[in-house]
Length: 419
Image (tube, rainbow, N blue to C red):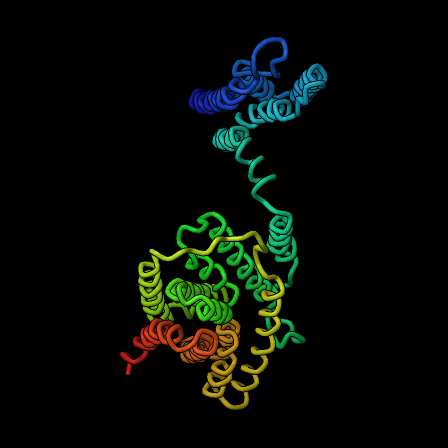
């Protein structure tokens, strides 16, 4: 029994030393390629890093905390000496920090070899990506984009965990964390669309910009593209493609709202939303194919997302939820559906989320949420048609209407099959 236990411990220790050695070699190879040659070469290469990782593993294996601390102090002192020796040639501290981290990974490898090896891969990727990371940070990323990224991180990682996860009476029974989760979802999707626009560039024209802007407001996007189509008739086909892609964003976002607010309702809404997505994607790519020979729009730097829109969405959601709750309580589910339909003309996602919130809380049956959501989607399609004809004229409006009406018919088709 004791010999078997000793064998298991021996195998685990051997795996830890192997992970430490592999981590040191991996990081060391990358540093070896950058340390240079001659008396001005940088601190540490493949041998130094491999030995440093093994030193950490030995210190941990001996189970002497003071020895581990002494080793870390020694590695830190070596890094300081190397920095001082090369202080006149802008040495930086990356290699010194990497050497100390390699030592700590060697210590970690004895108890957690897989985590240590994975961390070594991440460290090596960061070290090898110096040039593209520097280029992205200095030349590609703008000040406003950096601020937007920090805002998104704060909203998701600081504010969201601190938001109460319970119904609040002064918010008409709404759950603050659920509301803020939707805000974070909206700005994250807007940021994703913006990054896609920057990354793809002008290769596919207004289609990508339409998709990105559609996550903010598809109706506004269709109106803006209609105004451009009226001013530049040669770009009409490209504008129609962008309008279709903005409606793709509407359906995708609606599906995500259902999953976020009331996952139980997704099974009943999945056939309608799935067919609608299939039709609008086909219409969007058909428009993209038709505008392949036209001049695409050049992307420009700007804001990654519209925080005011996301906050306005949360505020409108709260107000609409109050209206739907009142209608459902005093006039029944039919009145709640009519309220959601009216609200959907302005914001289909807020109107749908208000009804879905009631279903998630048990105020109405989950199955009864399907009709109000489709009613809100129908009203929103109507507002898009009005925007398309008013802003873009008859030719633009008619071509946009074909895709939107086909999508609406697909959304209602599963419900008609039931009857």
